[in-house]
Length: 296
Image 1 (cartoon, rainbow, N blue to C red):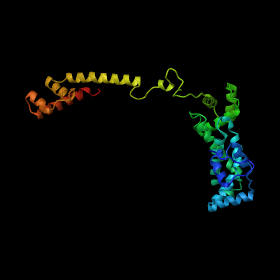
Image 2: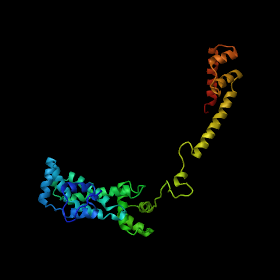
Image 3: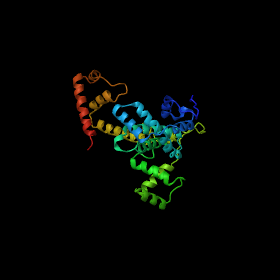
Image 4: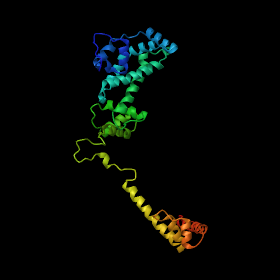
């Protein structure tokens, strides 16, 4: 159960630390936002001192203060991505991960405030989260595609289809090819459906039932296997026909019998010769058959 907190009180460090990983831990997203907005903003000197303590002494308390003083920045950035249908709390949570990465890498001696340095890391983490979860089928896998994805959302906020002129204009503005814009638009506009169907399907079939099975039940593969087996059978019969009657009888009895195959001694008794002689006939017959079956 979520722990409620009064919006008139500042949560304890332990409660807020939990809320950084799970913004809903303070009872509601509104309570979380109210809490982080009441946290003090660090001066440049305070930020520099804390960053030095973290960098030189691995002071985790300094890291906590740096993170907490910038949580309101994450809330502000996450709010810009609410149009993707993802929960605000989830966006904030991912942004907080980016903030923690930024704090870990922040160098106070570069003369840049943490707020400017952290923006990139916060947005990058939120972008990754949106790409992973906005569609079951990934719409953007390369850096260029991700840039196009987010800019295209911005340039067509109503989600309307683009005509040729609009596609060319966006392509020119983003310095990409028109076909890349059109392809991303198709990906973003694609409708999702479940391959498994739903429990309400009256006929009991779902889309996955009509996909080709790449295993042994694929119709095309089965026909190929049947044709190959037929050709092999015909070739075997032709090879057997090249043998004399005794050699053919030995090969069939040894290798083509349904009862497990006759032994050398069984055939030796049948033909009145030694078992070694039967083996020699068998070897010669098999060699002749392989020669006949070998591709030209």
